[in-house]
Length: 288
Image (cartoon, rainbow, N blue to C red; front, top):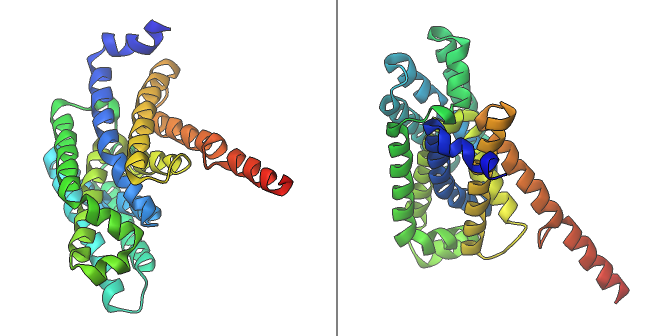
């Protein structure tokens, strides 16, 4: 058992880098996912993960597998999509979910066309699904930098983020920080998706952000506790997914997301606010 769990990480450097990168990514992404869930913007994260594709694809086609151009491209396009959909919803009759859907679909189509135009199916698969086992020192440095920026932003803006999640109208009535906090939060979402894209690709990077967050919701109501539980689930999912990938010869990114999905199903069934707890509580009330 000891060799099965720790052997791959003790023997191979690529497994050590994959574990380090995915754990740092878990610590950074999971709290952002909690705030997305509390804002009822869970699908926005999925849309944004698709939206960064053309920027990353353009960087890939022009400079190859160079992290910096792909990161800058994904970040710029992600921010354009987020701000563009926000402006359309603010100045027109269209709601934000509809404008976000339009922007991300245009962006996704443009990204696939770009890769198909100049790249190959292998290039497209790499951009879409990433390769956590191929993380190099530069990629890990980028992920660590994004995690540091995320936590530095959480420090002074924590109360504003929580207030805007729970009661945005109250925050707007007592303070003018609602708009800047919302903009900062969108930047953090895009940054973490770009960091996740390096390991899990544009399609799966949102999985490590949202699945631990929604699983944690079955265990607690407290925002800080939610973040800690989500981080714990994300870290365990990263470790379990890499071990599963190694022993079962599975793609590492999908294996990590599948383990996180298993954690969500178990939490939905056995969590303190899950299906079984709700059924037991309902039966007890009827008996009383």
